[in-house]
Image 1 (spheres, rainbow, N blue to C red):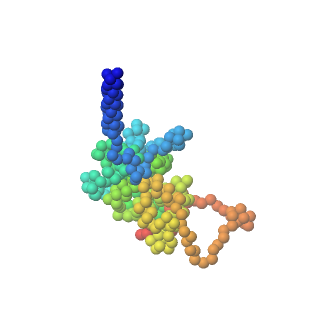
Image 2: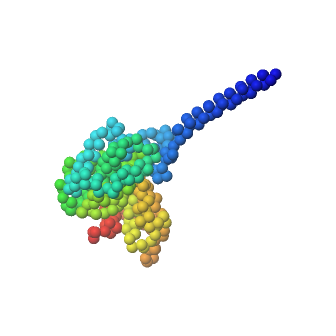
Image 3: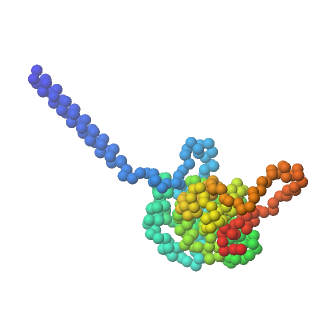
Length: 329
């Protein structure tokens, strides 16, 4: 009887020891897989479109011509435009008469620059430090040079002036600006969520290559260029015309002043979204208010309408726009 009880106790002890070994092994296995840092940065704002949206029309969220950032980098169909990016970078360096080394040395603490940029992506880009920085500089300089060239070309074309030397613009050999359909495709791709680089990267590169002929803020050049897009033209022109007197503080925007707005820009898509949804407080209008009758009523009363001949990015709001930019009268 005693031997039986002793045997049972021994079995229980062995079984308990076995459980503890299993639990300890399981604990070690699981804790080894723990992550000290979250996969998602609190600053992440560039991410892939959720599958629940993508599955309805996958191609709507993929770039057609140019890959910007890490998500679509290396795609076979984007190889031709990669050569154009390098040509744009070379033109930018030539225009500024600086070397690539000088440009990179101008970036304050390039290690922190890279670290900060990575935090903007919801998925940690699986690129080495050198490859990631190369991507930021190549894509960023391409975007900066594209908007600068297109803005200068459009501005000079309308005013019929050669403010910027032709050899600096190099429009005749440009494979993008010379083809209207190509610039439309590029602008479409630059508004895709998965196809972004952080705005601070663009701002940094732009400030390092600030042009002496058109020293305007990058934000204004980008928005003015997107006015060429029919779907955005009306809203962006309204925004540009109503922001011209920010410096005079004639009125305040609901979401803050101009400096607050600039500080909140995350990427190009965020800039355009904010500009097209920006809410203003009522701006005092001097004199009496004028009520404009509907077009049908005006037509019935004898008013004749004609189609506008304005087709550029500047004519329809030239006076307000030039005043807003400053430096021209």
